[in-house]
Length: 388
Image 1 (tube, rainbow, N blue to C red):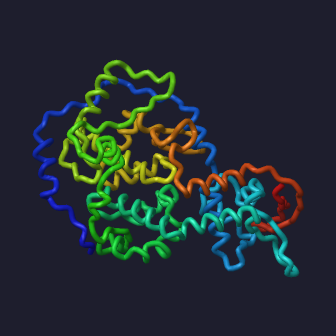
Image 2 (cartoon, rainbow, N blue to C red):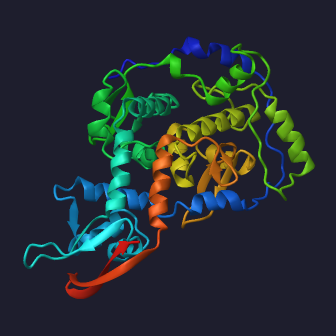
Image 3 (cartoon, rainbow, N blue to C red):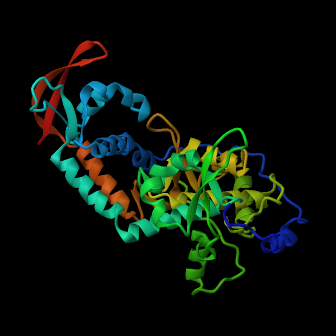
């Protein structure tokens, strides 16, 4: 069992300050959804990027750095591909190359193109650097610190693994480097094993939110009692009803409770509780390298943390903070303040490498060769195309 605990004394000042205060609720007004073309494009241009990198990691993990094309059918479900694996490989010939091994009677295989292998090697240098591994370990620590118990099931962490920028094999390659930070724990009952990750100890030096740091920077490092407000960025053509604008102004002036505090004693329907909920969501989004993730990931995490439907309500009530895109076969939540039009205002080093993969994905090709491969009992003609 980890040594991580939260002292009840830590939250006494919050309890005394807020528990007996009267509360208002969100105004009875409809907050409409307005399409943001720039943020939709930011989401849409990364279509299939996660699948590309997952398949790339699979190929690289093989001793031969190749996989048989005949076994490709299993990957459609494994990696949530939008089409068959063979068609997916053919769609991105600047990333994947279908080739005939020199060994007699060998079936066609798939490997990375030289260009994709170059990007992978440069990405690996980043992922293996001391600075990056410390950065991702601290962001993972902060994610666990947002929970009341300081731990999360591994399956929930895996939902956010790509967005956090964790190595695909982080359990084996990252966690052993930080034994003072993390440990694997059993979160199941006596009849089941549900493995999770928990903090070894609370790290007070990391328990400052992005908004708190920003406020201190604006005040020359001094904590002031002025209310900390969220950045509101509404697209052109978006017009809130007057009573919603009045409510938003009053809501912004409510005290800011750090997401690293435990404020679950607040009435869940109060405006103060909603500002705390938004603070948790806002901080969580800042931990992600792309400042966006699938809406379902947030709802699953919020339900586990005990917020119930409050994450969903916060996303609806605050379209100036969070944008929900309906592109690429799902709903994606984007942190508005992190973007200037369709580009990240501050690009994480790993996102620079991911944009290199996007460049390859969109690259045109030339030179085509045909093969026949037997898949699921039938012959299928496939092509190998080399990048131009």
